[in-house]
Length: 349
Ligand SMILES: [Zn+2]
Image 1 (spheres, rainbow, N blue to C red):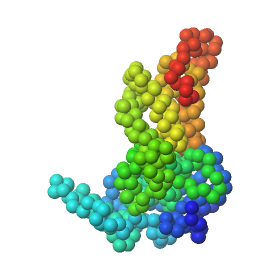
Image 2: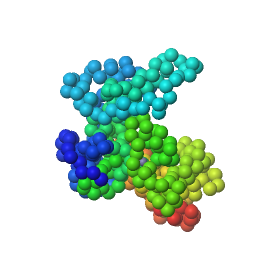
Image 3: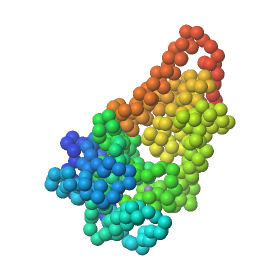
């Protein structure tokens, strides 16, 4: 890692500092040891664009509402303008509607423009918000890694963007988040990250993906299997979990998915939700001991990545509470369910 030569202002008492990294722009570095689950940042939106698919006029409208100091802050953020036009398709098919054509061309001109613009900064830094997308001026400084050590989320209860440590982080280590889907292969990740104007140099991207003994090779293989498992299980999860529970091999696939996420160090809401589904299936099968252990793991991961004030936390605490009650009831009047074992779940929980 190159020696940072400049420190930027961060929110008061933040456990990190922003440094300039020669050749890489800015990055956020821990100033003390952090534990998994530590809240690193809460950030207020600077600018909200309350639509899913935005046009220049939407960003302009939001920008006009900012004070001169806020407008200046907006223009300190990274911009992925100045990209090579040859690397982006420039023609729009005649079947595309005039409005969509306008939107595509606005985005294209922002990317290949010579100067930072309202759109180029917005497309480089915008994050999901309950009412569309928003710019969070401090959260936007965190760089991407395909194996990040932190995660971000919009917390609607406190109306702030949060960043939590998803792993133990040593003082001096860069804090990174993921801008994309962990399941993508390297080529797809590269395409997605092109929109942000950089090529990822994390170990999963910069290593030899054809060498199955390297981290990059193993990671590529894990992500391939995750996509297969997702394909095979996603329609049987959530509301359809009842059908999933009746499908042969479904639980084994979820267990394998959780194992791959752990190996890929993805301690995020993906893992929490798979743990919940495993817990619910074990509960349904009467394996309450395993169900409780897995539901508690789900709650732990959820707390670690979203914090104790996240709006839907009760969905996770509720599952733990219900299973504990069933176990208590079983102790008072032992039935068959405590004796049943779901052996395939024993390996992971
Ligand atoms: Zn990467």
